[in-house]
Length: 614
Image (cartoon, rainbow, N blue to C red):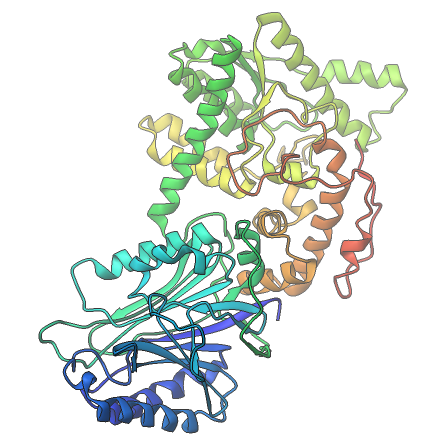
């Protein structure tokens, strides 16, 4: 379902030097692992006769016993649909080497040899070279018996092009070995754009002359998505890897050979993977904070580079008291620091109109004042009313003309001030607004350089919150906190009777975090509308109903197609994220109909007009 492949990895429990005891313990562990019907189950290398019994592994009768127990295990698992990879030692090339037996529906289909095993021109029946490719439900998989993740990089030619690489091992525990395995597996999965699944034996083994610790881990496209390690009990993971994410992450590679063994897919009516509502941010809080700080620094350095390269030393931007212009102002402040320019070189312009509240106007004035910037406070009400008179538009008609005339008046002021002072006009619109076309063509969509357009709205909120937390000035922190607590609004329609903001963006478009979620998976991985909804149902199941998520998805799809003409003439910016909308990475025909996308949603809401106003 949705190109998800369910994988289980077990470290198992063993009895030293006892193949029968190892098999019985393994059969017990498998009873739990098979409950979710994984497509494949990976067990450690040598788990039927662990390497702690080194002398016994040279004895033919012990190797034969391990082989017998393998067939007993095959019989015990005959009713399973899963493909099992089980490790045991075999005699080969004048010595004993680890091999991974492939079990399916009661049969031993073969034994995969290590990649450095000497091979004759023709292998005996039942033996498979490390190059063997398994097609498991469409997942191109190889088994690499190389001693674990730290050694796997030596065999890059075998990893290239695979969707999934299995790394069974049975290595002694050493200081930092598990952490290194995690780091290496993540790096390999990023380098080769694949899933890495590792299983190391094992609990219950002898502690002399080495100590053994079982662990399992799964990495997907650069991220370790699950890991367990334990001395006292077996480690186990079951996880659905996503082939679409893997395929989008893969690098160009030579064509793979035909699969040596092919297995039918197993369908599941639920998913076993972590669904973050903010997939563009790390799960761990400290890692998220580090990324947000880096995001802000990249914004500031991109603006500083543009100023330095053009010789421009002044910046002008409009300040509304909202999130986007606040972050853009802080970016300008940081860019001025980087270039050793005075804060007075930043011209902050607030331009109150028909919908500006006292709250936002106060914050728009107070924030740049606290930062020592130059401030201009220019009301646009008179100019817009004169413009309405010129074009014969009634101010009582609160339509798109009424709203966009204000945005275009503000942009005209900023552009003219840029000319007057030799300043660059810094754009404030964010990535989410660019995706949804929530900007005015010829208005706030214009700028000399945009610093926010590669940052989604949800991340902008978190960056501002982090900067507020870090700031030493209590009054400045208070202003930023109030801005964070202000409803998101373009403030283009008049206030209510209490002077409060009436026009709230999320009541019109839907929840911004959900739109950012759709944006990430739609742009970065090319998910279909049905898969976007499936992922959203899992990520937001405790917050929003399926009807809400589907309605907002329809809104997203309509607006992301209809708004392409605005993105086609967007200001320049630095592509500092991997799911941006710059034309080099994402572009749609400006006159494309959204119907082809909406048709993939069952019972989608009736389409509104597909064209988007300027």
